Image (cartoon, rainbow, N blue to C red):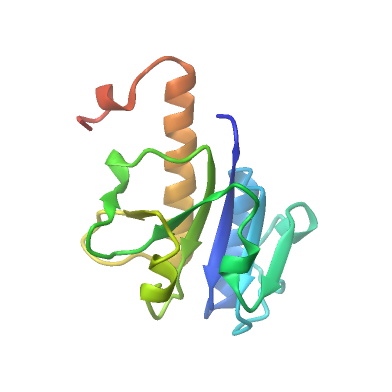
Length: 159
């Protein structure tokens, strides 16, 4: 797939989850991880076994909206009304996936600047790092199918 993905985290609570997000970003070749807020020391986590911060730019600041990579399309990942279920979602070529804190939601102020909203259809909400893994895997899997000429509509009954 042409383009790139980047991860935005808003006020992550757990340094363990951030470490696991960094690991997922490294595994799925994300271009960057951008963190708003300073609730945790995310660099020091045993879950980032690859020490992804050595290989992927990690930025920290007070305004995630101001740190969106140039020409990237913000995608809010949250269990909110009107969100597209992940199996039916078409990923933007240059995606900036925005995830909320483990103990909260993104909220209207963030949703207002995200033109896309996607949710993982599960029985209950998922762990932050698990959700990042699922989103990035889905992006990779759909891109691989498209490169082989297989439409996403032909896979898994998605219409």
